[in-house]
Length: 169
Image (cartoon, rainbow, N blue to C red; front, side):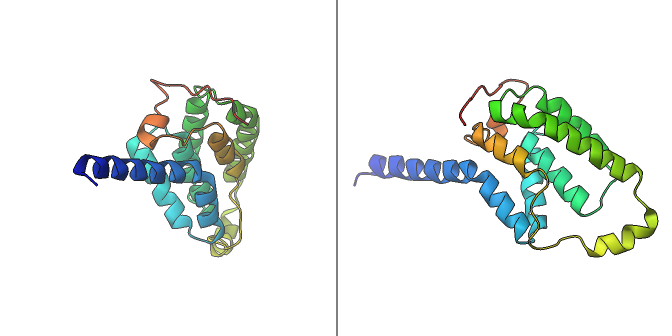
């Protein structure tokens, strides 16, 4: 095999590997979450947000982690940001799930506002539970169905320069 053919083959295989990881994003993060590897989910969120601070999936995963670990400090700002960024995204499946996201955020905001401080210590012991599904998994799944993860995170989620119009179901 000549050198050029080998390079083309390596690039192709690397591209297939990246594409598979991106198209199985929901399965990957939900599996990590369910198995109790919530810190790894936060790392994925931070990596995505490091490449694009307006990444919807990164923001959702960060909020998921913050609410699970009772880290309420910046969560309302993150909720506001994801709602603003989500309005610019036109994926069909995510657009259908968006009202649910708004409702979930309203409920979460009320819970944070009315959270009894005397229950914090007991509730903190319940965090990082194995076998628990993600609250925002329908939104991540909708993004995946829309093809949001089909390209690399820094290009797929640049909401200022590109909108998805994928209507796959």
